[in-house]
Length: 392
Image (cartoon, rainbow, N blue to C red):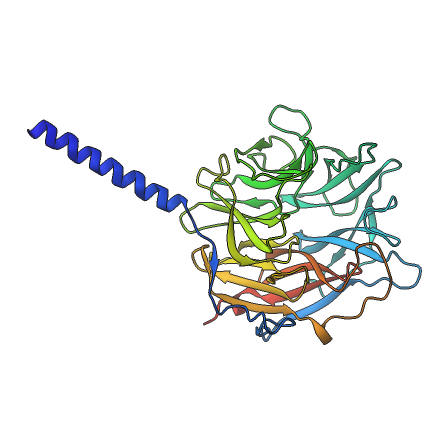
């Protein structure tokens, strides 16, 4: 009897532990019911922080490159760098290439843009973002070859600099096997607990998003693909694309995705083993305009997400939302509003429309910096003291 009792108790305990583990793995991402007032489309009923400031990185004039997009920031040796893709008029036209500029006063004034990388023929280049390891600045470049079958896919190069001005020749970003990673890098790598670097690549064939991780502190080699089952999708683009990520207090990592299926909500996946395996993406009730977005952790651990939290294709307003536990987002601040806060678009171009588009963010010193393209035309940043965001 005692033996049977012990076995029964052990079995019951195992069932309880397994059930608890399943509940913990099933993180549900949500927002407070009254957080966003969709009846006020320009502001969502939100307020701006008192010390918020917006600065222009680049404003094209007559004859300048009027298409500018994919802005990414990173600090290096006390200087803030901005990288983006640009062309004379149209998105993804044959002259699309990557430029960068820098600021020595925390984003208030900027240098003239300088060409970082330009393909010579039969391909375009777009911004892949930045990384820093000690005294080395890394620039990632996404290259998109012209293809007869019109399947959009590409690969990732990297360049390095010790001063932010002189750059090495471009080389392939490689996996643990030493071979080039077969895809384009997402502009949002993060260091997680333990020092591992996690991001995503959109890999061949086409653009299928996949989490990747590396233990190379330079983030240019050693990349390994995390295990994640993608949702069903038509064509050569996965349903979940263009993610960002943050860490939860329990050490798990949450990756947020744009939903290419036009639910205008947010897809998410969770990893509890430092990026090696991920849950199958699920829909959350967090509204999203079907655009790139940005997420991360403030220095006190608070989770933030920057996006256009609207249930349609309007890429405004620009909002930062906050969560203590990385599950319930119950606070939000307005960064840029629609209406009078948005300057008019000055030139025509393919896919251009009124928008605060593709925000990417970085915490540096006392500030949260958010970079974006207004109307896919003006390169701008908004800066706010991060402690102002978490005040009660």
